[in-house]
Length: 106
Image 1: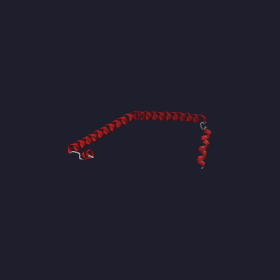
Image 2: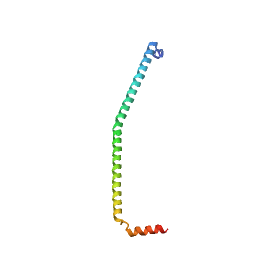
Image 3: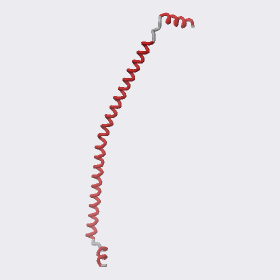
Image 4: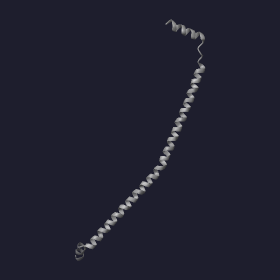
């Protein structure tokens, strides 16, 4: 029982020491936590860089693909227009005269 009584009565110097130790432990834990958070942020930043560069490269590739597709579409439309123009006979002078006469009679 004497040992229990001695443990219950902690001298002020011992209590102050324990408080100082706890404060140091909390301070160390806080510092360690901040360092870990900084490391996680650094890792996240490093991980984002290739994605950002990849995203920019992907965007440029998509723009180039769209431009190439638009160019191909324009080329095909030009060929269709040329085919249509080549296969449509020009109006003959008698058809032009007939349509002019019809317009005047109306």
